[in-house]
Amino acid sequence: MAGQFLRQRIMDRRAFLLSLAVTLPFSCKRSTKTVIGVVPQGVNAIFWQSVHAGVMAAGRKHNVEILWNGPSQETEYARQIQIVESMINQEVSGIAISPSDRTALVRVVERATAAGIPVTIFDSGIDTDKYVSFVATDNYSAGATAAITLGELLNGEGDVAMVKHAPGNDSTMKRERGFEDTLRDKLPRLTIVNQQFCMTDRARAMAVTEDMMTAHPELSGIFCSSEAASVGAARAIKVRGMAGKIKVVGFDSAPSLEKSLQDGVIDALVVQDPFNMGYLGVETVVTKLSGGIPPKHIDSPTRVIRLADLKDPEVQRLLNPNIESYLNSRSEI
Image: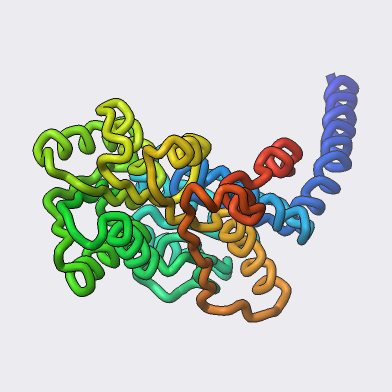
């Protein structure tokens, strides 16, 4: 019995040493890796796929690994909180996040900062200054630009409606406020007769657009404050045969929106550069980790695109970034 016990102890010791030889190098490798967690508001929209491509481009350039994870729906801020909490617990090197709600994400962002994890906020703002950098469009100004554009299309007069994104979303709320304020201050003969949220859902955007057209048969124009709102409204306009009769200014880009622009269903798009926002979101964190001081705020400009602009190579880069070349060879964890 003693000999059997001794043999078992020796076998157990050998197994332990073998496992140690296998796991220790791996653990050391993992502990020295620079891993940046990136948390978008959602993962399905073309906008977020373009952000993802920019994130991967920056990760490739700076030789860091990317942990990309976001909710399926842009209204799931509780899920965003869970994802960030998990990244903090995993002790990632840094985090870039686009908050789906400007107040709900404050606590977890401040927790990450307190844990020594640099955080960059991108696309949409948050009610704290405990972050490294904020990379975003001037959304209020973008909404004002949309108002001026719709005013030009309608010769400054008519009844208009707004298909809004979702309450609590900082970026789209600023666009909507910029649109409303500009109509009030500079285009007083354009009257907002209806406005409804689509809650980030294209089908709901289509439904609310149809409701508004039914309720206001004299409707002259529509402003849509997000990709989902624009896609849904375009579908409603097309189904009702109102292309060209109701002027539409959409926001952001997608293949279907480019097609709607070509078909005259949408008259203009206010387009951001999500690829660049994703890229800078990662790069600012890398700069901080390297001992640098990135700018506290980086503006990512917008551009108004009409049918005649589609031939411009720069416009095509904005509308159709080479997403697949970055996502098909990605090195995510």
